[in-house]
Image (tube, rainbow, N blue to C red; front, side, top):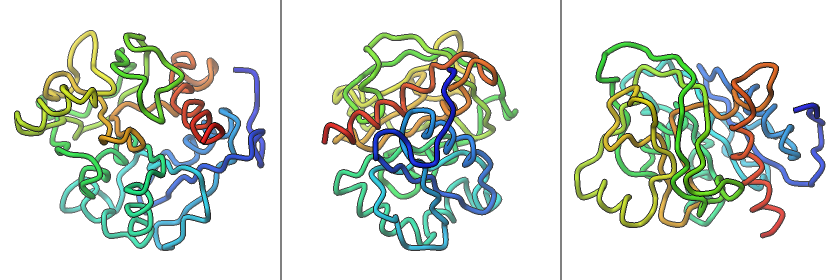
Length: 235
């Protein structure tokens, strides 16, 4: 990428990025939003106000120190009340790593993220297969596309009962799947899923770290943010 972020974006679209205590990747997510052509809007965990944004990103990190369970305290943050209601009404929401964990804790997505099977933190560039383009966050991809996105987690093992897993598969709601070895033991190599409507997506790898050739393993992650922008502009 040779473009640089702007304060207003080029599309008029506004995408909020939530910061919780312990969030690490909010600045990176905001930069990805800007590089995609939208205006990043800072949302604070303690404010029950989405500031009229068109979409929301829950970035990675260790919200509230991952006390109790990853995402368990963040679920009750003031900003989450309007966010959950808006997501159920169709607002596009992307949860990355800790954000994915929060989406599961709020029951916007099914299942849970548990300790990696190895019991070790994993940090590596990870190959993924895009399983569906039928979400707000993957429309700029084609099913079967293989991308490389950085992965960094200690509790990225996606688990759900067989009924839920079968439902996700049958409804084409497995969005990303691990390739080249499962890094954390996730059931059926699942790296990311969506809700039934396709506006809420969670994944463990970090697309915001793959938006510039200079700082990431290519720009494969940018497609998630441009997909959301396309959905917003065409809404």
